[in-house]
Image (tube, rainbow, N blue to C red; front, side, top):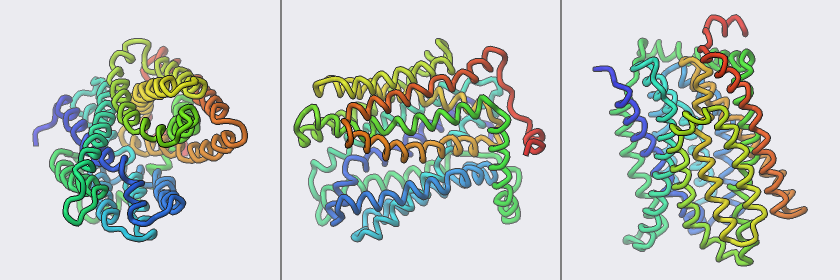
Length: 426
């Protein structure tokens, strides 16, 4: 097959990204209501959802090493297949344990899905042109995610408005549409994602699986050797903790300023769709931010700016002010992700790329759980505003962790780690 150009790689990456997140957008507005329609209480829904988080935490790093060892395409195919099975089980679930299993399968999917597509894009881009600048593509991916989720959410609302279709309830229709889209996405993935792997067959697969632990070990070795990479991964601790403010506390804060939970819920629906759109717009600013002020200083400034938007969410008196701050927060969030991810990729060579991305992602899981416990307890003991202010400070405290990357970029482009040195460092 003819080698792909940089433009072809980017187009395929963005198309696959959109197909990955469009089904998610369809499911987000109706999933909780659908589970309630099937007879689950809110505590049961929360308990079932913990299966996903536990599986992601347990499998995040091993699956990253597996993707580096056996190839990104096999792991992505497995991930999207598991997601399809999860959706099919979700649509037919009628008991708590069926929903628990569906969420567990989603956890396996999320762990397998974390990093391989992005790593394929970066490696394929560099294979087409070693001097290519891949950060704009990562920014465009953030735009695609925001647009895909927002579009899916709007489409979901339209499907529900159409009402039931025969024996299928209105809340089930978007889930069936998401399942159908997942089938389409899997087929497109099989066709468009091409990857050169020199060794194939059962023996090569066994060797690659045995290689996965070594890939993980070398990823940790690189983390020990690189102050820049260690600081970047530690950003995720502050980020995961602080994200609780705008993911979990915002609905409570909005209900507080409106003095009406139902009105808050009505406002939050369109606001969530708008938030993903402004997140997409923020991600589209990546090329400008790379030119000025640059990746590392830009990421640091955005951490501080995001903290300020959370301060606004916690202190503004009316719903309009809170929602404006919320939208600004998501715009900053969308702009931050590509810069942070691009800095990570600059510090690691291809064979260990997915392992390091998984390690970075894994750091956010316990931090988010800790933030959920601490900030909700603080909100209950004091006020929601106080908890948001604490979360805002934590978000802003991540800014200095970008200084090592900034200093390294000012000295010289950071070279990729030598695999032989990594082995010796273990």
